[in-house]
View 1 (cartoon, rainbow, N blue to C red):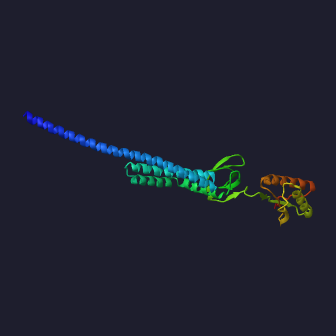
View 2 (cartoon, rainbow, N blue to C red):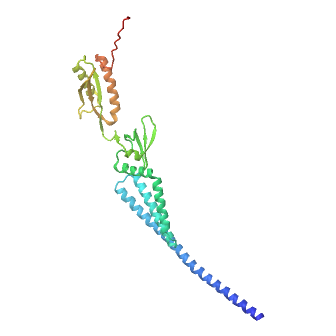
View 3 (cartoon, rainbow, N blue to C red):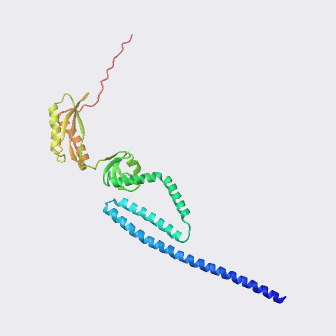
Length: 290
């Protein structure tokens, strides 16, 4: 009986030892494989990171040689870096033995969802790229866009920062700027001042015209070429209207316009010229009592 128990115990010990040996063998094999996969994943990550750095450096040089705007260049570089690092991480995870097909599908689905959620932002981004590439205006220009008139202080990928004449700061989405008309008052070196000046029918027309010509001729800020225009434009209901159209440097536009208005009024007063204004005659009829 004791011999039988000893034999049974021996068989059980042998079976246990065999199981331990099998587990140890599997663990050893799997551990070696896992360790090699981890080392390979680390190598893929760091080598990929180095390759990405070289590629981004080349991209930066290409954009610099192409004279791409610095804001757009920085954004494109950041976008390329994000895409490359995502690809490198997926390759490293795949090297660990993890199936990245489903992971890539999840990332793609998440990208689509984010794209729909950020549809307006993407529209502003595309408009920002167009503004930076085609340059309808630049920082420092006075423009009218999206119903806002002001000086451009900064242009970013998604919005444009403008300062109004009364020193209010307005952030305008680029999508609304590209979607409408853009008037750039600073794009040209010169501008034309357009004034309409009316005098009475009883005034000396030649004397009025000579006075207006003298005003534009004696102002040193008014350009000789193109030649200023002073001409009768309309015989109105109550006045003879002149157009006064001198050309000036863009930076002198408002100062010249305001000065001309003031000098015209003062000159008319000194010379006795009239400036007609709308008036109505009211006639009252008294009804006799019956």
